[in-house]
Length: 437
Ligand SMILES: [Zn+2]
Image 1 (cartoon, rainbow, N blue to C red):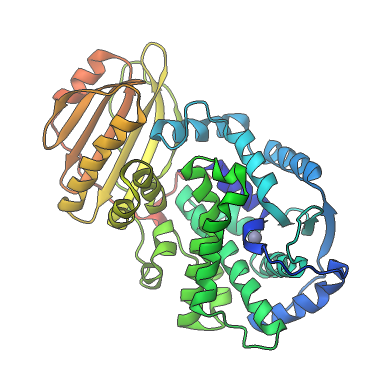
Image 2: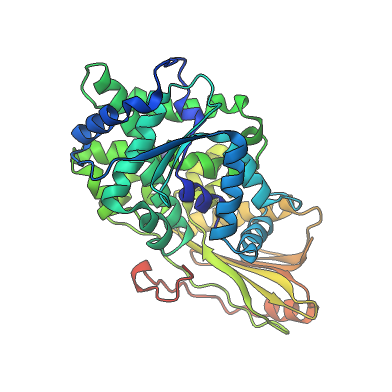
């Protein structure tokens, strides 16, 4: 999914308070340590400092204004609306959810510091509480060092061909910085700068357990909450795996030979063997008065895991989502009232896992809408009417398709009557030329 929140976080490369939380207060002016922290990070990574890093302080009010301005400058209102619509049509956020406001609230709550790669400047938040500013600075200076060598703006905003790749790149950036934060603390206290598995796992655990301290994060829809946490939790585990395999060259490799989808972050072995998600073909139905495409994008393993976790439960979600080969969606307008129609396809690694997803997806449809009246339900088709119009969900081989929000009855009748199955045509990411970004 093309999710603004990910872009926003990428735009500011914000460090989560939850990860920097240490009861170790530091009375010294934090910024006086910058040079020594950068020198230590350079030693650990082998990346030399190219320029000194500018810095400043901000309070939460200033951060809110900064984020508001940044969003206004980098995203058109219709782009945010399109993202919000996609999240709503998938049932990942409530119908009254305000993506822009929620994102600003969430980042304002979560930021302890951030590195703005637009201005190449690092900011500490004034009221970041008891956090050790040294540890927070190590995380942000790791971003600054990475930016000087690998151009983070390009890496996160320009290079990704789709949303799932964008999430993967964000996980590279945050994962490496979070891992280096642990490594810095070790080296600073005279130990070898290689975090243990337990230390790495503590990053994951602490972000879940400290959720209670953050009301905005805690009350956010699961998808939004986990989109924010994923780059830090799974990203740190991913970097740790790459470091254990490659050693020091890992610091550059994750940028120069970057993972391309969330599945490669979740399963580093897929990154090592360059196994990419597929791009199955969308159902592309012919609809009355079909208008323009509002948005389109990828639906990766992360997206599927969240969708299943929300409606089918955690264990089932994690087990099934890893069998996804790839997914795509588009939203077009159609019908007399030009209503949005969701086209969605997912490809699975076997007919058995596709059948399992087909079965789970029926539950998703019934749970995400107040009203879901199936008028056709057999082993391969589930069709009827829902909150926003008619729907047709189908399984053919290892592929599941769904068309939702059809407003014209005749369109739906034609779709239901069409038993022709869609073959999954795979187009590797590399050949994709009509990318939206
Ligand atoms: Zn960060």
